[in-house]
Image (cartoon, rainbow over all chains, first blue to last red; front, side, top):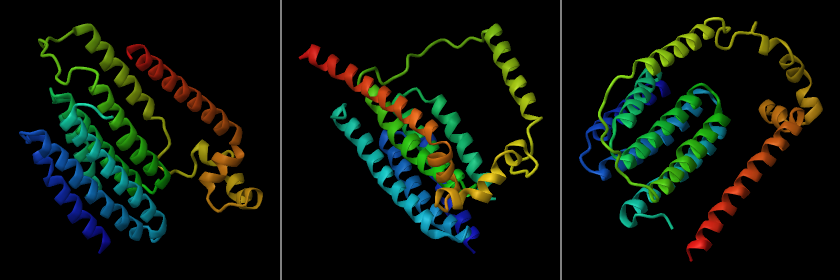
Length: 85
Length: 175
């Protein structure tokens, strides 16, 4: 059951690669990074249920969500201002 | 099945990152690569490696890439493509030698591998009793190999201090 859910989410993340490869503007690619980040958070929690120890994996998923947020902020700040500070 | 898709994912990301002319795009695609790589680590059960990959690979190194991009030109120069024969031969020969070297490696997770027969059984047997933690990775890193970890931390701390000092002095000179 969890395996099938993981498969569906991975496939749906895979579809966003089209925008990553093709994406005419930089925002398409940033959005791809964000979407794949949110998908991976879900996949990690589901993998925790597959390994029957969700408590460890929830921690990683949280770290992931935070890093994804920082990443998108860094990209957007650079695109808008041309510098990070 | 999901693992196959993830591996194909990695392949597409790597090829696209190299093919991009715009360096910011390459940085974004490399961060996606790291995100997928961390999922692969989780699927293999290596949870702590996945945390490191997520924080260092996807987080810090991407922000460092962007920090570098603020100082250099964002677009790659278009250079004329021509095949250089000698470097190509060297690269192919080294690659073939490395692949040949992996043929002698024991199977993945094999119990008969040297690394699994030498000290690991003793760690597994006495680990909980001697270090008082249930996590064997933490026991080995922080207790059995504590001095190694202390040395690594010292090296990385010194490197970080040096980087901070160098960047500071540069800024002061400009002001």
